[in-house]
Length: 435
Ligand SMILES: [Zn+2]
Image 1 (cartoon, protein in one colour):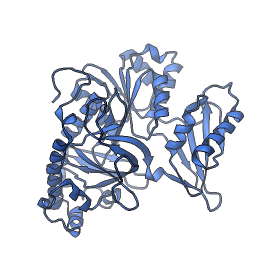
Image 2 (cartoon, helix red, strand yellow):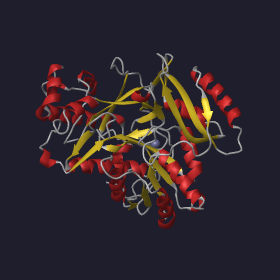
Image 3 (cartoon, rainbow, N blue to C red):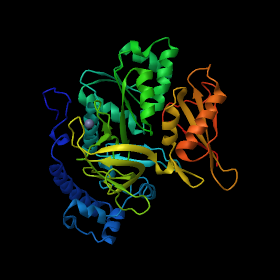
Image 4 (cartoon, rainbow, N blue to C red):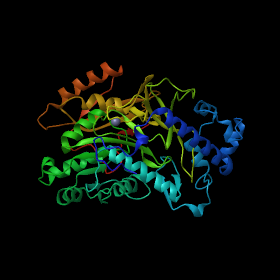
């Protein structure tokens, strides 16, 4: 439970600031319980553990043994769709969420009552870290439904004692009106939708500085520090990054603290993090980029051991200036699936975003278009100027030079008229794949 003394930075409990060796002891104990649960009640994953020589949880004697355990993947959830990976009878689920599968069936996850409680707890902790206080008006523009963003922030906010406004996504003009009329102080949304809301506020003849907004809790899609700068300025807030995936619980796996905004603190007593080389599966040195892998430590309904997220980032265990000792994801580059290989060069859309939005004349609306005119993939960029008076052709030339100098690839740029690039009400589509 929260400590009663309201000191800054507000810390949920000593788990967030305690010594790391004590945390590791707790993780080991919970890892054994997870392995035990899988061996007992998830036959498809238990078979894989036995193949790897693990038939009893007591064989896990230290966290180093984690590397002996086999990975799990999204394909495991697909192959066992919808309920064959449940470790509890279906009747014990009190809720089900699903993430939109880009191909065919969605990924379904189930929650027992204890799972929902744990999720609410990590959300409340993360949101507190991000600056949400009891009594604050929390405008939740994340979609309610199978997507975990809506209900995740909703219950986290209620647990803290914030006044939650469940607006959900869409009806953007109404978002602006409700933010103004109900005095929203914290805005929850995807970063791209927050920009759309910012525009709607201006369209309604309001200035974001006249609103009560203080912080933005943004996640659900990769975004960069340059996008953060835009959001801070556009909405007059401090924008804070959230990370999660429904296979773990939803949002709340990691989040930034409002004060330092220097990496996303992982809720390590719930999720055991690793960073691996996606090709070899071997761990990378601390601080190096790799694929994020998480093991659930408390999940009842659907425990997952060494789940490969497909997200690329790096992790540090250095203490944050906020005082928390929980490890931080220091860079989230994007999804491995989104990584483009252009003429032999690996390119993350987030790299392009960083470069584009670093240029003052470029508005935070852009997209990459990927085509395959012959054998090789080609990429081009469309973006918008901040003002109609800007010479679009000259700006495009400058951006092409900038992209070539930093990526080593020639990427044609079109600076299109403001308002041309489609806006999103949820997760932004930054890459148009025309292959
Ligand atoms: Zn911090």
